[in-house]
Length: 241
Image 1 (cartoon, rainbow, N blue to C red):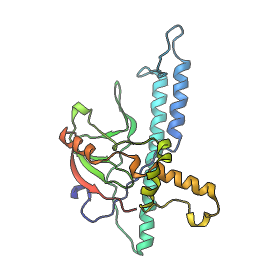
Image 2: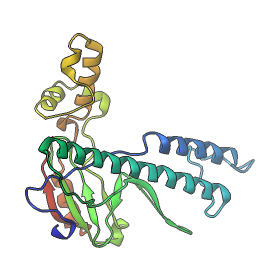
Image 3: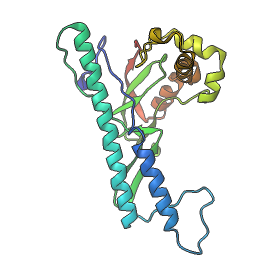
Image 4: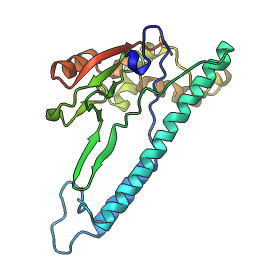
């Protein structure tokens, strides 16, 4: 942990953002291109997934576009982190130091040539690298060190996963009460919109979607990761805001 600048009583900013729609557009466009280029007379895949031949012009274009989307996602996370550091600086009234521990995309194709790993809802756990397993807004998050376990394709799961779908969470009577116990900051100052029931309803629905009761407990997940030899515990992060 100290090697990465992580120690007790330090404030950690954990940023979760993707390419804000760019990756979805890339995926949709190339899925349609793959469908249009499917060999005439060959039965179409029943699952709707059209493979691209490794090394083909279309596959190369797709990988290039996907990497651009991934870079845009990295940029988003970097600037959100810098905004958080600036906010802390302004509140404390002094310059604060910071360091980037790691950036761990959890929906990306890794590799080149004919060797690829597609991690969906999984992050890298190569030997000695930071492995991030986030909890919910009300649960701990964990920082681990990867072991490079080939049985898991040097990968670890990215969080515990949802217990309730977003729709079910919006209908769950316990979700809003649990979410209200947290210190949640949003772009909307709810006190300025007390007369707008539509805005308040959307605000509360969003809170309910991400309420801690909507997610599974993170501890059994991290224990499993360690017991399976995928990654080793380094630090537990407690959510404060």
